[in-house]
Length: 397
Ligand SMILES: Cc1cc2nc3c(=O)[nH]c(=O)nc-3n(C[C@H](O)[C@H](O)[C@H](O)COP(=O)(O)OP(=O)(O)OC[C@H]3O[C@@H](n4cnc5c(N)ncnc54)[C@H](O)[C@@H]3O)c2cc1C
Image (cartoon, rainbow, N blue to C red; front, side):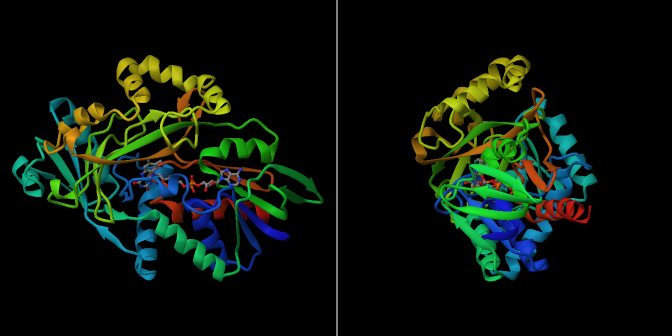
């Protein structure tokens, strides 16, 4: 089959891109995914939060794409009658040592134009009497949604616009002739002028396969585990986030009401020795070797020693969760846990450092999304615009 553009990966980024391309241009597009169904990886295994952009420095891609992506996403949800709820969120400082970071986040939120206000201890207790938080602030622009549903809608609209979605097809080879790529998956061949790599947890390997070059980034897979508790324990649907460690690119174990009415605490950040191992402790040799050869691991351990190491290796530890959550919400207890789920984050590293910002690069007639962790689901439509800009430059050169 002959195409103008092939997108590798039908996650929320590949889906948003197919949607935008097919709404705006008359092009022949194929989206190839190795799984039999959508939402098997990050897009179907996250907190379901529509983020506001509180945490990210004003000029970063995360900040710009999150704020812009938030607006585009809400418009898309409205236009397509997808269930969502704007709840706002509470960022909570549990003790005095966290106050200065809380204040810094508050100033950052104000400088990027978000609606934020400090709440007193009494006001916080009105949200739920068991929130034991001395100081916190409320962010208006936060909501709940099911990102699998958003992705399904992208796929449906794009398919109606003529995009071919091929599931169960893992990209495993590429050849180039007369300015055209020939991509092969298990038994199928696709000819295309341009390729976009939206392969999430496998993006560094897909980069190497498509370019024949070493990837500038390496993925470090961090599992995020959630424990479910009965929703009756919490009187509100406002998510509560602790003040995060500013040097660790994850938001901490938060109290997460989901759009389906369930209530979760999580996610933690545990190193995963299998990039796609969702069933307990699993090891894939290639993935484990990538981890032990990644300098970023040694730097993390050196910089944060016991704290980070403990978190990175503590899988399914209910007491770890109890210590984290009880700091701000006294209703949590391990005896209330009645469910478990997890997702694995594709966190890119470069030169031994965790990459904090989104990263999108071009190579010949290819665009590669090399770092799109949270809040990339919120930002998917803005990220699609950024990819389109880069693609247009390639086409016009
Ligand atoms: C625990 C957790 C919590 C999160 N919480 C939030 C949140 O609340 N809000 C938010 O905005 N973001 C959140 N995120 C981040 C968000 O989920 C991701 O940034 C987003 O889903 C990334 O989408 P993606 O399309 O890049 O990746 P994915 O959804 O992982 O999709 C990549 C696709 O590529 C396919 N693929 C890989 N290799 C190949 C190959 N060789 N050939 C063919 N196909 C291939 C895979 O099968 C997969 O379908 C969270 C993530 C996690 C893991």
